[in-house]
Figure 1 (cartoon, rainbow over the protein chains, first blue to last red):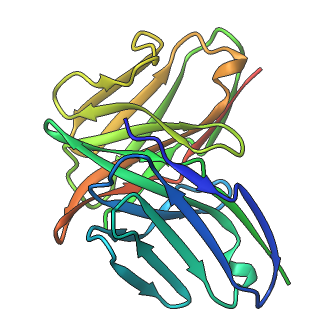
Figure 2: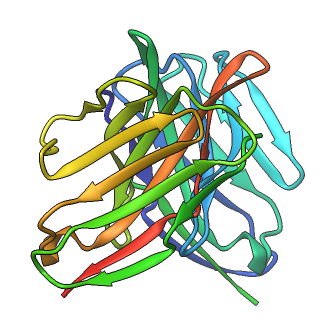
Length: 113
Length: 117
């Protein structure tokens, strides 16, 4: 099972600031997903990255997949209070007839108005 | 994507009792569902993979006799926490595996908050 390190674990910023969250592993990811989870709810998929060096944008969110496919980052521009939540990266482990997700510990983001 | 519901959304029970949590795929026939547990301010930990019509596959360290999983239909999987203890108090989340575009994706339910007194 792949171990994922996410940093920072907690982040509290003011509305309008930019931030970056990191996800790293000592192993190569076959592919990686980023999720956002609000309190008392299940995670919601934001993006899947597959190709090394890949960059995907989702409005104010920019996701990068490292060239070596061992790291990924999520950058939020001009954060808003609605961005508050737990951001999770997850490695996709495929094997046998199922594929499984291994989640990082998450980054708890608070955006203050 | 698939719409997933869970019932109940929260439950409080006495120590020693059993609690059943339902996970329903409302608009998608799910051959495979997953059950996760999440403690406060922590990440999701996979407990087991539920396969329709066959036995669940449990992750290492998860007691299969304590966490009973039944996936009797393509739209319903249940997790029963037997002889619950306070340390079983947690947020239990299920997900449905679906193939969308080129990737397998999981769509998550809203979770069930279990509190064991």
